Length: 244
Image 1 (tube, rainbow, N blue to C red):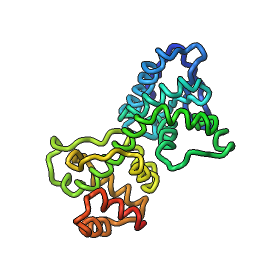
Image 2 (cartoon, rainbow, N blue to C red):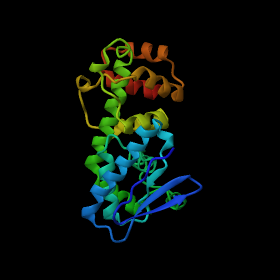
Image 3 (cartoon, rainbow, N blue to C red):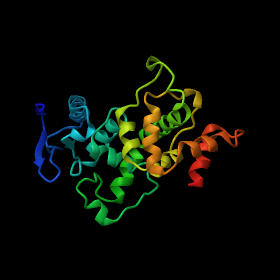
Image 4 (cartoon, rainbow, N blue to C red):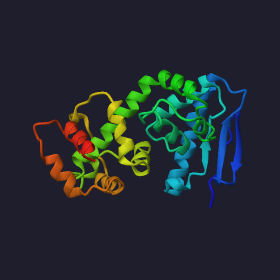
């Protein structure tokens, strides 16, 4: 059973047999004014597929902006960074590059067709243009992770009406990336109060999957976070990171 896929103005599409995926790309005729709306529509189509199949691995469409104009890449990536329900794997992989503590990559790295940037200069220019959005994205990433660490034991007992579902973007990142990569977001995030954290639905299950990647047990986590209580919760989490 398949779901009918859409067509978009000034968007090209080609089926990649190797990836078993339909790849959308910008046509040369596309304008800056069209991009935000069109990208949002494609992202929504991907979310609809996730809901239709009820599995993220069933997504068989992606948007690739490797050969787009730099100004068009900025618009598309800004739209992605501000979209909490982003599920496009190519966009997620590329915005996570902003989180990693590296400003230079090899020429071979940039030759990869799934990397949207063509060289260090373009990468730096785009990163600078999206500085505020990257900071907000990093802050949300840290806040959702902190929320899971703070409340995973309480959400087992509370009514689902008082919890917040983890947005698809962050769920995908937590379940796909190693914890050390995710924790790099601490250096880019804004300061925030733990009072603003959420009680996340199914946080215990999500945390279990995160910890399995990091080889940390619940017992070790709980014992460590209960020590050094004079420190803020975030500082204790940072100390846990340093120990690993």
